[in-house]
Length: 224
Length: 224
DNA sequence: CAGGTGTGTGACGCGTTTGTGACTGGATTT
DNA sequence: AAATCCAGTCACAAACGCGTCACACACCTG
Image 1: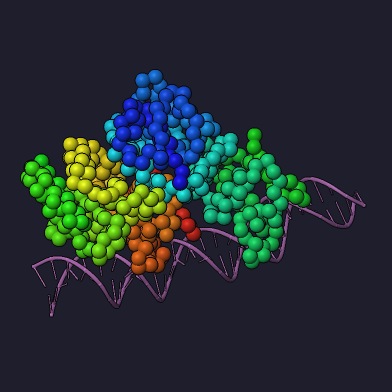
Image 2: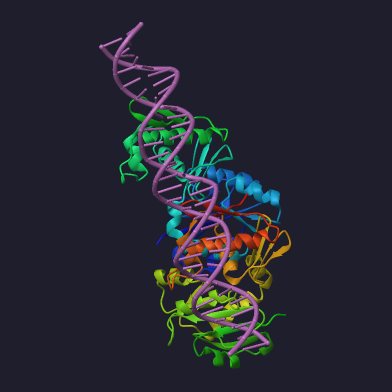
């Protein structure tokens, strides 16, 4: 069973160490402006205060997301009061959710435990960014520079598969079996239509064209 | 000052009645397979033994959650030994936390008193807001911009579960087991009806539609 | 026991999605 | 330059998935 690593910006950490019975399943650590003080393995959960002594919470939130070591941490923003604008800012800065403060021991544990029980799925739910493109596996949503791309199920699967193998030519056959459509056998030319539809969807969200055609071979998801 | 109503599955109840000096602040009652023997007002706290004479503790836990009258009780699961799998099962069945048994009089009172002195804290964690939507666990009520949403018990639980996992696709199976309805097995299409009813309820309270359908997969509670 | 409420289910209809064939125009080859 | 190849696009029919309704049953309540 994985250990959940919990990071907090306030001084709640020490208080929690006493409170939690099963020390083997959790670690607690202070979260400074530079991020976590030590590197850890396993799922991470960060609680970030809206206001911090040295640094705005939003900025820290962005840094956590930007840093590869903490990019897939679950970030919970602690808002002082219930303001719609702040909530939106928090989510936009990369927070996964938020609580209306002040943060208490039970609030922390409630959330962590609730998620813990559904932990297995979380590993699969990642979110990754490629240039202006963001793919949120959990919400099954893609965005181009914050504006959502309306995708049909198959288009989303296609985009996901392409984005998982960037800078690499994928043959039509690769794509068909990559989307799990071996049965019944599908005409290879159909892939062209998929690509066309996906391109159009990205375009109508104001996006560019990251899908390059490699004549007589297949398609590539281009980075940069 | 509210009275805390404590339910126990074992025979600890009688022993506690003698032990506690300030009878005005607590009631104790036996917890049978049918749930509490009498209905009470105010916060409830149930301690459920892992093994029970007539019924598995997990099952009782689920029933408490399913019953509108006890849905917001704080349920503590009493585990016989420290087993990771069991703890996960307990939480998934709807337990709020757990202790590693055997349950003693002081263990019970420690927990209850700790909570009692932090009543304000409790309210904070049991009520959360997502956009225009407010969910009040204690009052079992939801609001959209101050106007109450009339929800049946099942709809409330559905909304709660969805709101606890926002921005994340929940399959019909997730929702069924998330509401603790694995037994007896439920047709997945039934979830569609739940969603439909919940949407209608929110709508007739003047609300929007935060529930997005993800074709061929499930539903998401959408933030922003 | 009668009336009311909450909930699961089967069935129906509609909108959406999707694979395919045909057509087109540009690129590549001879 | 002609012939060939190949990808982009369109329209369409079939399949699929979802929303919704009515109904039956279980459960409470008086």
